Amino acid sequence: MLLSFLKELIGKSEQFQDELLFTVMQLLLQVPIEIIYNPNSQNADNVHLWKAVILKALNLSQLNNRLAMTCIQSLETWFNALPVNQVA
Image (spheres, rainbow, N blue to C red):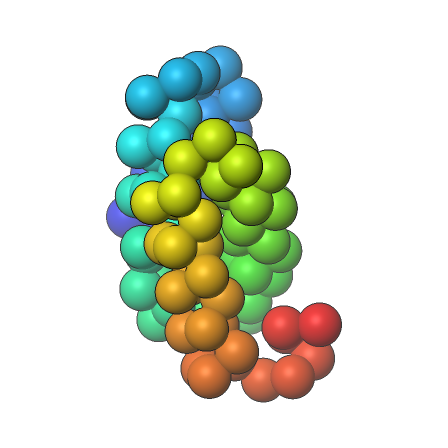
């Protein structure tokens, strides 16, 4: 249920701008990896959605250092928690 909400938020984020967009990106980047990726689940492709979030956040981080730091922390968490084939 939470994952469905987050996926919908990713889609709606295209309509957001300025502070709301930064805040939504911060929220999405702080979702625990256990919610995004479950190796026992048939739907393990959720990581692909968050890759797009990270790319967008990196682009926006040129305007917001806090967002850049959150993005870097998320990437570090991913690299430590995910299998190599999911990170690449």
